[in-house]
Length: 146
Image (tube, rainbow, N blue to C red; front, top):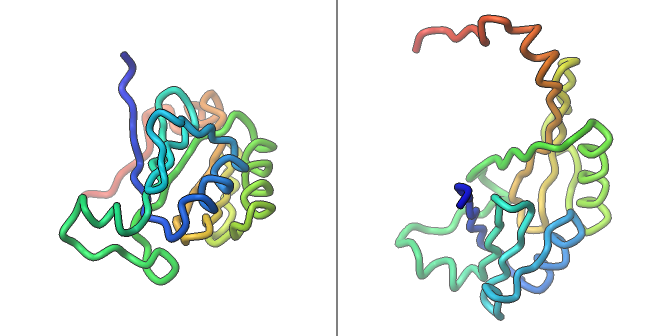
């Protein structure tokens, strides 16, 4: 079985968020969905668990961050091309999201943009030409000591 990632996201309206995630290419898995949650499959390995805030709160004693006011996480997802990056951002906007909440990145070998879902969660779709990236950093990217 491949290793999977389940990203649990608190939302105000599960039904509205389900429609949004379907619009950006996710498929709802009804086996793990109800009025409090939608399991939204992006790929075989990635599932966004869209959870009503009240239900989400049962999993943690911490306050839920207002993603419109504070950054809780940046969710970077790879795409197969620059056009696919633009397409998912366009789909997000058409479904009620917000485009380019962060600066566009174009490093030649890597291209990325951002969007927010209706609850303010930030996504960073990106495309990287791995061959060009390896040529740009043959020894790997340089890191400064901490």
